[in-house]
Image (cartoon, rainbow, N blue to C red):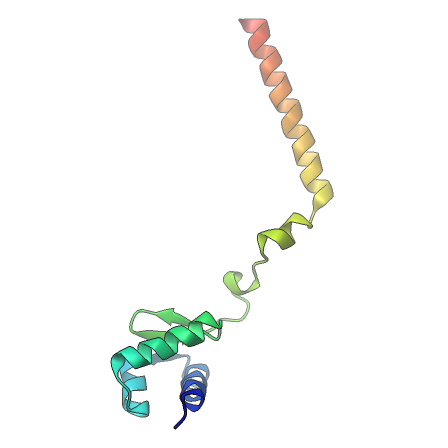
Length: 104
């Protein structure tokens, strides 16, 4: 069996059962534990499954981690609201500094 076929087999098992263990991979594909772990890590690096202690789980669609946007994407969202918060924070900062000077 070719490496890609083995990776596809692991992915199919995870998506069918929800989880897979290193031991199951070792037995079904006749590979060492280190090879099984490398296969899991390779699939995890491609965001095809989630590594857990002793095996892997299938990706949870709808989870916060899968749907979270990058910081670059977030910078372009809700700009007006962010500017309003900034103006308000600036007002509070100036008011606090004026109060310190008045009370000193």
